[in-house]
Every structure is written in C-alpha cells, then in structure tokens.
Image (tube, rainbow, N blue to C red; front, side, top):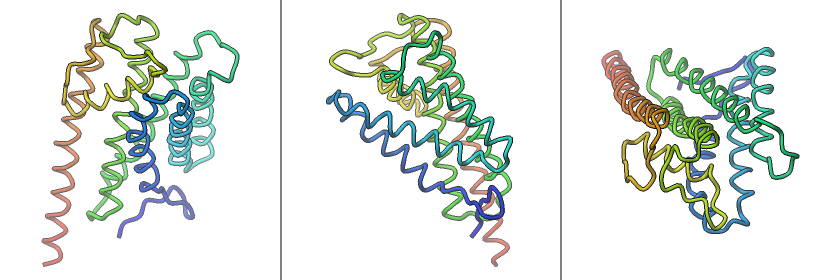
Length: 223
C-alpha cells in the first residue's frame, strides 16, 4: 500500500480530513435550523483549516506560510468574539482560499505520482474533491460581502449564517446539480460559479480516468 509522507515520520491522514468535511456538510442543515449550534460549524471549519496546515507542513517554510495565511481566516471564522477589523472578511476568506488550494495542489501531486491504486489514494481523491467545494465557498463570500445583490434568494434569516448558505451553493454548483434556489446574478458571481462547475467536471474526468489507467497498469503487471 502506498503511503504519503510529509517527512520521514509524518503521514497525511486523508481519512481524518475527509470525514471532517463530510461531518461539516452533514451538520450544516441542523445548524441552520438551530442558530445556537453555530459554534459547531465554526469548530468544524477550524478543524478543516488546521488539518490543511498539517498537510502542508512538510517543511518549516510551508508551515510558517500556512500559519500566516490561516490567522486572518481564524479571525474571520470567530469574528463574533473579536473586535471588528476593517477588511478582515475579505483578507481572511482570500487567505483561506489560497491555503485550501495549496492543500489541494499537494494532494494532486501525490495522486499524480502514485503507481498503484490503494484505499489511501481513493481517500486522497475524495478529499481533494470535497476540498474543492469547500474552497469555492470563500470566493462566493468575498463577492457577497462586496455586493450582497450578486446572488439571489440568499437565506440568512432566522439565525441562518451566510457561510453555511454558500457552502450549500458551492457543492450544488460543483456537482452541477443546479437546483436554482440560489442563483448568481452579477457578472463576477456567474463567472466564478461557471469556473467551479467546469473544474468539478474536469476533476471527475481527469482524476477518475487517471486512476483507472493506474489500476489497469497495476493489474497487467500482476498478471
């Protein structure tokens, strides 16, 4: 079984981050109905980013860079408990987007260099796909905070949080499910949604075909 090491003693736990994102997706509808549980969403988001930092920490420089990127995202996530800082939401969401993209890139490199299909490789591919949906939530938030009219039918009433709403919208867009209950209206919002939909489909085509090719080669060698 192929394992992915950040250094000689440290292995990425794709299983942990994968289930962290799945857990966050599952509890989101519950949190939207019970506003007092919003802290669970913040905790889940924090865990995902901390795991992302762990995943990038195969060198001191990357660890420092990832930590610096996460600080404004941490302040944004827990902004209810910190004094208002001008532009912190823009900086925090942008930094978080870069951080998650860095982790996705790191996972892609591991998938590209794999020579056998294993359970860990499958977990890595699933994790990267889930991270894409999570990452794209952040540009939507930046656009929304700049211009709330960029999207239609955003349900943020009765304790519902904007982050949770756009997390839902992001995964619906990534999978090209397109219910139409939330829609991009402005040009930039439509462009970002379009790019996410294309990336989501290209990911499935490229990664799955790549893994099938590896599996075929693996079986031929076994024979």
